[in-house]
Image (tube, rainbow, N blue to C red; front, side, top):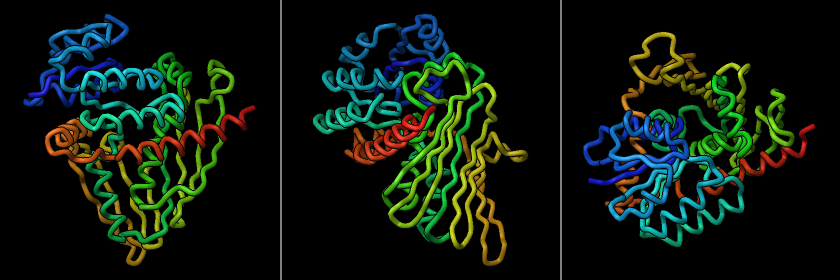
Length: 333
């Protein structure tokens, strides 16, 4: 049995607990948030034993084995350091920090404490749909090089919260780390160049920041990709995930975006150029990847498995999106 505490009772904190609180090998000892009402509500919702507004209450508790850090990026590094000092295993949400230099320090600290297992929240690595597509591309189903088209636009119904996150980071960095990691994972290649454009579509976005961005990437194997991310009350939600090669294309359709057969889970479509056939593959979606991610951390603890992705992969993806963000901000008017 592992005793676990959550720091940060927002959207991602809840996403973790939704898959954790029913696991037989986990006891949720406590949840923490600066907002006492959010902490109390989350504790009641997921049957946590206690709640607090002070993260140190759990980080310094010798009975706690695992800490999940689901706060804003600027607090990740100081919380991580405290967790390592007190021998805690950690799942930390991405992006790992608010800037690249601190990200380097984050990874260095993890490497200096091998006794503490740290897994960064790149949940697509633990998503059965993405693992299937990675295998399809690796065996040559669509050939190479490939074009990767990925969009993660989000219509905001809580603009105040999204604006607070934009003040800390950008849509390109926040979720872009996922999709740069996917590009490297799916191709086995390295990013050789990155560029981007961005715009403030909302007057409340601070000067020097943006809420809609597009980055373009070229890879060492000749593959290329783009990633688009926008947050605003007016943008339409869009989850395009498509991979195009000389032999065909693969498209991921999330369960919530399917018109029919939602109960079948996510849908992967393989369009073959040679005979114009279409293979449709249902991928059951019975558990969120956050649950599989925690299972993997426990394998790291018990079997000494390496992190997935590795800390080096995490830092590489973070470096690329930080470079894209820098170029975008230089072009802002």
